[in-house]
Length: 259
Image (cartoon, rainbow, N blue to C red; front, side, top):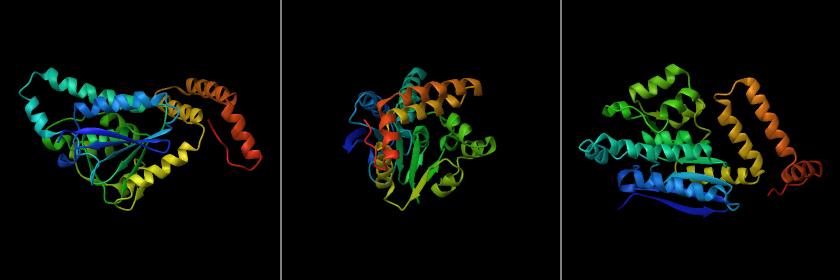
């Protein structure tokens, strides 16, 4: 069976499911391309307010397909470079996507699968989910932005331990480290992620877009630049229709209806 990325709607949430269950949902170029295409289509769709990425069956994603990587060793280096460029295009598209993206993780979340989860805005994981930066275990170095994500999320020594040692780490430990947002009972990650997405779907889309953009920019912006950017976003959002609805609803003690 060919690996694919399945898309379906759940209310205002687009659910993207990595479908390659016989290989624990290992990734490949066709999935990267489909991921970019799906998010580009959803970016300007008023019907989509959030995205959940999950894996088919009992695993999120085992990372790269080692058989394909072994075969690529017999090809010119440009072949693998092109494949990684596809992955990185998907990672960058997730980061820049103006709506919330949530990873719903069950079972194995390894290598590039772990990188993919880290690229999402929020992570919901089952209690028994297992995360591992497996690259060093097979003589490889990370891709998918793993070094960037972990270095920004964790102390240097902790990030290096995960990357150098390739040890497995469970969801509760990652939650304690601030990498995972919530831990659920086994088999409940997707339902919990969809419930979280529905909470976000009820908020003003323009405000959520501003918050995501501001957090992305804050990683490298000096304080005076960030303050200016925050001012510009605030003023723009204050004069948006949704601010009138939100403030009015709060004062009138009713639920707001954002557009």
